[in-house]
Image (cartoon, rainbow over all chains, first blue to last red):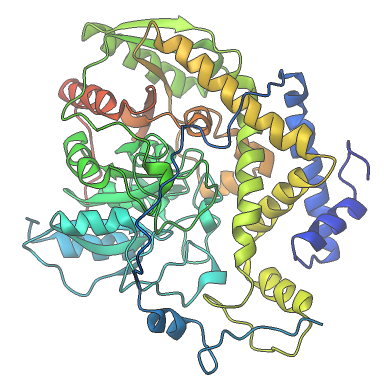
Length: 95
Length: 439
């Protein structure tokens, strides 16, 4: 895959990973848009790299609670939304 | 207590300006009234985040911010329109209505909390919950001529917020006055065990300190519409008249903020939106006999809008093997570099001052001609504080051709109260105007 350009082959591969089915027209349009966007973002190549970054802009604490059973929301209320079958979530075939 | 016409104004804002997706049937006059952007979960309302993929989703719980306002004596009166999942600068990317500017129906409210901006402007005493990832509170506050506070990342719990970029999303407030924002922000803020990113915060002080020195980065004033630039210079003069020192500074790392933000935001969005697949909530795919790849792909392709697809594709690409280091990790490094650059400025000044948006509220026909990259570029003033998690506030600072112009103050992490103090002093010197509503 060419790192420096966003062609139809690349966008097709990205769309497959993202579980999006694109029409031919969309494929062409998004390839052009992403190419423009990534070209403009190449200014980042000039920014210095550092190893001292975190994944959040502020410090984050781990929060633990007492190991006691608790229930915020009645599971029945949640299942009601989900169109469950005999309390099982319905989903597609795996193969 | 609300004035007798509040419900009429809410319906007017819904009907004429498309500010709301849903409103209550009746008002409780014993309570104060607030609205919530449609990506915040609340009992009794759908939470669709502007996306067709969530049609029909009615959460059985309240987001922490909403729960706390209700416990503080508030009634949630409606959900406000927004760009799909927050993906936009003008609130035109919505499956549930495009909000129209209170000052001119042919212009944008800004995005992505556009409905919140319109509601805050049109309804006196109203407080609108917004959410900012890259400028989604400041932008609408500027275009709708109201006060918009985006707190420090982690100050207000994100529990019950439908994620866009989870290291960037912040719940904040829009209203006609800083006093209302101050009051309700204090109710909403504070640690919440349901959101660990809210648990490392220092205690919110009762009152802030008025900044005595403001920094204006020269890099932020390039590519500004001359009318906005002139209005901003007048605002600087007014601050100086108030005894505040205003000094030009340089922040060279600002040039990296926009790409770093869009890479982090879309990378996070592309994973957060993986959960929308036709099962469990929102739109359900009925044909269970399909292979799971076809099942997931079908519902996502039919339901996501154009900009959502574009951002999912961009974010997925940036996280792929071979590109992760060049884009995603580099953007994290840029965020850290920019935090350090802000900190250097805050050693000498208490806040950074810029215009909020580079131009006046645009006409919808102008927006229709803009390319995606141009739209992203419109966020270049609001993205830096959002990327770095710094609190910021947008305040009306001028009126040009009958349209509001906003300015934005950015402070160091956790210094929201200083921004609100500045907003209060500013309001005393610069009376805000609001459009006359004829019911």
